Length: 401
Image (tube, rainbow, N blue to C red; front, side, top):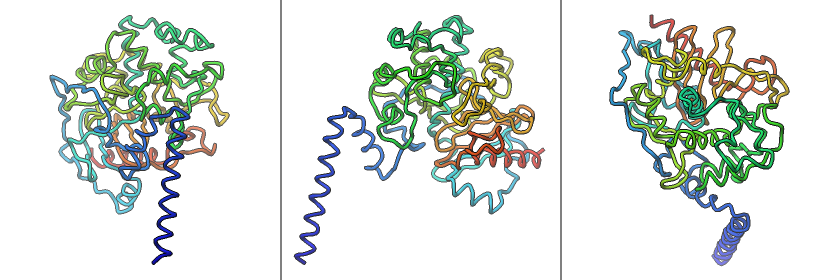
């Protein structure tokens, strides 16, 4: 018994020592957002961000449309049975919603617990495509001159340290040359500070230029956050209010959406964290599939949508030309049947396949591995589950005519 008590006492001292050491590191580094990160993850039994983090942060509300769009239901909707293999795979990668549409008609809709028809979930980086669309709209309205305009025209702090060379197009192409650390696993990364921190403007102002802009594809969420600040300055509105006016309301969103902020009354996390229902996320697919025109109305300018899906031949980290990313939107060429899609952490996808007139939404808590080996250049940088969901949706569409 004495040995047990002594062991517990030693264990207690070790835990206390680690706690004090961790606190000392946080204080010395000035990374106080780590307290927020620990409270919102480990103390809740989580290891990182989840699609159900809405109530952990302050947020702005994007009110639903005054004229909600109603999807048509195919007479044979859901008359496709997933195989046991399909069910096992979706359970493995924790799919929470899977929807398939042909044009304006719903062919298939399935939810896995705890998700449901009216549940909202985190888009993560799928929100980046929305920010890009808003940039296109702002240019069309003359609030921004062009994508070739320097970011420093809207952010005075970027007129120094070489950052004045960065254009809006460089940011859209993920080729800014900034030193943003994108790691999703490193708690000391810029990504972690952006998600759990309280001052996005300060975070963005501290970034340094380390490479010549426009030369290399380097996926960085900080680029999108800068675009969010440019939108605020150019339009005189919050990203939330501009998005509601120009996209959410015209699309006919049936439910309120929510955009996480860095603090109460603060700035939207433009690089992520737009919460909406699966059906409302699908509305973004209508923009992608119709070159920005929805129900006779050009929501996003056609010329910008054409630029959105172009993949410039700048180099990637694999040493091959970029064939997977346009202006904040992913492109998978798929053997002559291009798939344009919004993608977020843990496998949030809104996909559009114009050649088949299909829109696909998949939401979940996990995704499959990313293709790294250069066997098929068109697949590099995409994820294995993306190909699976494209094939599954195509099967469903072929059966439900």
